[in-house]
Image (cartoon, rainbow, N blue to C red; front, side):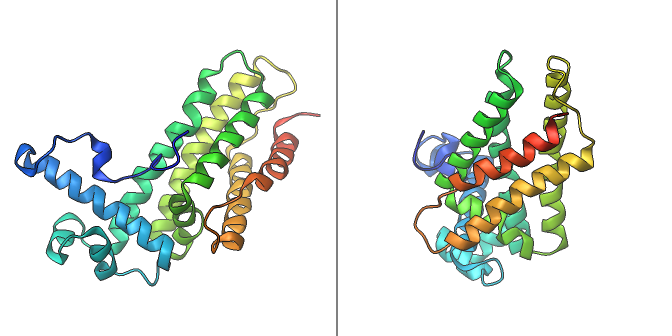
Length: 223
């Protein structure tokens, strides 16, 4: 696994050609938006959402104030778009390998999935601080968007449960609200660990795994 940039929004991950003159206006705009979104995440992780301002974002992104406002109307929108883009990337990275493991039992599949996701969250410290802790302080729009992204995980888990239950009679298919509670338990365990370790250079989220798997097993198995 790479040590950096798994969920980075920096423009050099867009595989753009070298030299500003080689870029179309749309490519230049996409590159600038990527830098601003990444700078927004970096600044929020470093200073907190409330203390982050357009001025601190533009300083970190090395763009002018006018360039920021050409890309985003405000800090909230920049953070919201960064959240959706990075979280969508994380969702794909999390679920795609797990769903491709057709011949793996449910418990083994989920254990691998949880372990892999926690490893990503440890490496992607900025992402984890922003979207497990700071997004909760950003107001109704950001909290609502967080809920929407969580529901995408819930829907995938629901489909996986149905697939698994058809092959293993011990696996049950909980209702969506039960699965939201399950995902909420994971979110809270991670958020608490992040708050406790925020001053550390690297997160250690391994202790989250077994408590969450115990909760998941209790919910997902008809025993």
